[in-house]
Image 1 (cartoon, rainbow, N blue to C red):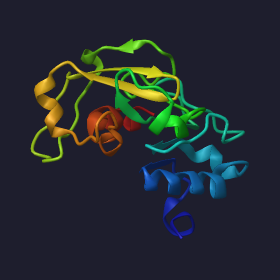
Image 2 (image 1 turned 120 degrees about the vertical axis):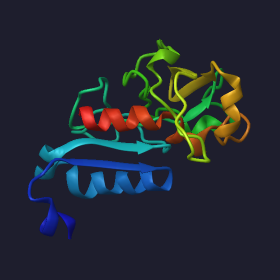
Image 3 (image 1 turned 90 degrees about the horizontal axis):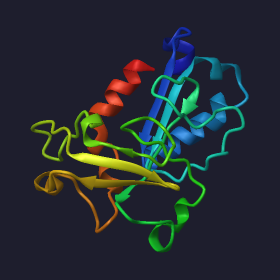
Length: 177
C-alpha cells in the first residue's frame, strides 16, 4: 500500500530490531532481492538478528558509512565473547561496527561514539564505548563504567540495547547514506 500510494519513487531505508529485524529481512526477500525496487534501497538495518553474510545475492553487507544498496547489522555483546554457547546461533552472521561502519576487526575508539540513549530517554551520553567486530559479534567495552547501568543487558548480552547504545551513530548514518 505504501509503495502504491505514498512512495512516489523516493529512496527507501528499512530498519528494525530483533523481531523487527526479522520483518525487515522478509521485506527485503519479498520486495527488494532480485527486483527493480532494489534500485531505491538506501540501506537496510536489520539489527539484532542473525542475518547471514550471504543471505542476499544482490544486497551486500555494508562496509563504509556512505555505501548504499546494502544492509548493516550487529549483535552486541560484552568484550571477549565468542560464537559458542549462547552465541552459537550468530556463527556466519554479518556484523558491521556502528562506530566506523566497517566489517573489519579493528578497534573503534570511543571518540567515534556519537551518543547512546539510556532507557530513561532523558539525555544522550557520548564517547563512552569502544567497539570491535569479532567474527559475527560486536564487542563493546564501556570507557565510562558509570554509564553501564543505563543500558539494559543480561550478563554479557546487550541485545536489548543494540539500538540504544548507538542511537546517534545510527541517526547520523541514515542521513549520510
